[in-house]
Image (cartoon, rainbow, N blue to C red):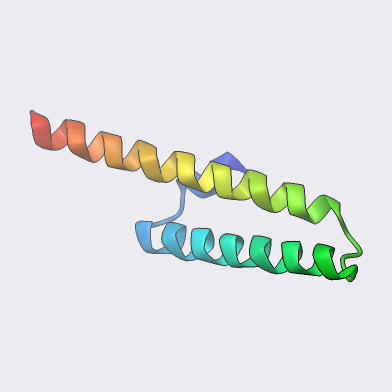
Length: 70
């Protein structure tokens, strides 16, 4: 996912994508450990997606906190 796509998601979609990507990362790590993983680049892509999603989530929380503080 690109950052532009992530910014267009609703809060619920953001949380769902984050949960799904974390689950996928876990499954990929298990596949790697058992020797079943074919596309090793997917592990890195998933980690980057989780980082992008977490960045957007924290930005939204900071924006909401700043808005409430005024």
